[in-house]
Amino acid sequence: LRRVRIPHLHEMKQRGERWAMLTAYDMYSAQVFDEAGIPALLVGDSAGNNVLGYATTLPVTVEEMLPLTRAVATAARRALVVADLPFGSYQGSPEQAYATGVRFMKEGLAHAVKLEGGAEMAPQIERLVTGGVPVCAHIGFTPQSEHALGGYKVQGRGEQADALVADALAVQQAGAFAVVMEMVPAPIAARITQELSIPTIGIGAGPDCDAQVLVWQDMAGLRGGKGARFVKQYADLRSTLAQAARTYAEDVSAGTFPGPEHSFDS
Ligand code: KIV
Ligand code: NA
Image 1 (tube, rainbow, N blue to C red):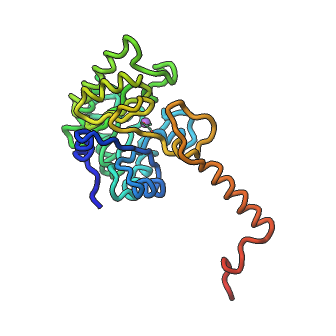
Image 2 (cartoon, protein in one colour; image 1 turned 60 degrees about the vertical axis):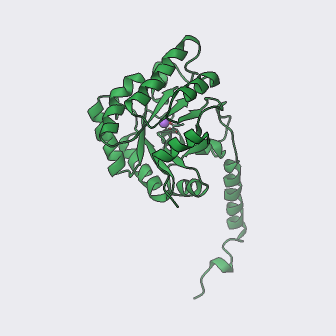
């Protein structure tokens, strides 16, 4: 059982092998996805709206992310574990980014970090990478900037395309080992994927990226409700769990649980 490492992801790009990333925020999700062969797990700041109960990722703190990251990194035996740097923990300066990145590796046991932004984050990426913290970049729609961007909108359309390509090249030049592209027109994502030597990881970025990423609760249908256009639901965990809870409660009401096999003799 060999640990997946960054060069393996680069080799997969060379070979034209597509791969899947999922988020994970706790021990069992990490174990299950790791055992399913998912090569890279993202401890996303999407924990904000998938675990911690916030409306967005913006309130998420380093202190909240560290224990989630440590749980995933401890549980995943093979997957590369990437942790999101929360809003406000890296934008201030390259030194702030480095200090935060080091915390994620020392206290969170992460193998790499992810941060949002293109060319404007190149100094942060460079500082992290030269200091030994591998960085995955994230361009296109960046949820930590949803207020500045005016909501969930496709990025890089029309005359924005060249700026998006420039961002992709800038993060690669700064030393990022991969780049997430979120809500980007498929043809632009395809062009970037072809131009970059590092893997592109798409979410709402079409089929031609080197990899794809989804929030696991969206992928497995735990969240419920109508998801984003870019989500495909592969299970209906919300119904499965609700049914289990109802059946358990009915058994308790009826006195059929616990049975003798669940009980202890004197
Ligand atoms: O936080 C997150 O889950 C993410 C991915 C959706 C890319 O940033
Ligand atoms: Na994120």
